[in-house]
Picture 1 (cartoon, rainbow, N blue to C red):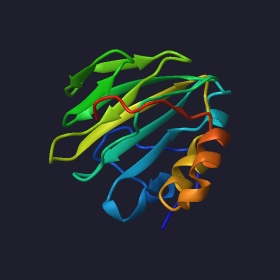
Picture 2 (picture 1 turned 90 degrees about the horizontal axis):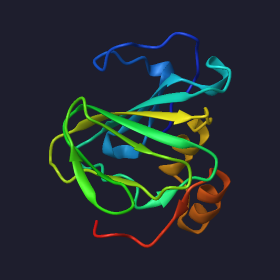
Picture 3 (picture 1 turned 60 degrees about the vertical axis):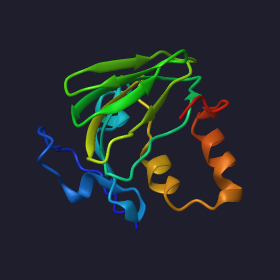
Length: 157
């Protein structure tokens, strides 16, 4: 079940979560917290905090044609694919995927992780995140296309 209502204020620390800014990603326990929607930054950026549950795996290799993504690990470990190779990101480490560059995120560790995602220019991803957990398999390609997610052959997940 998705719970999403946007307000102007947002938490500043990873241990603070406001239910009216959080999108639950299905029953697995992962969630996306809206830190800054594009309307709040005049479209310059959008920012989200992804709280990855132990079972969370992340998106397979893909690219976007209209925005870039920057990832900052707050807690735990995640692996980042830059189109050529995978590397492990630890807390306070950053990775960036320019517009059009293939990238992916995976979590191979049993503990949870927290990842900041900054999209530039700002892209409203709230509907995408809210729908991804419940979309029917036959509608998945249409959802990805509508939200500028272009998947490529999976690379050694």
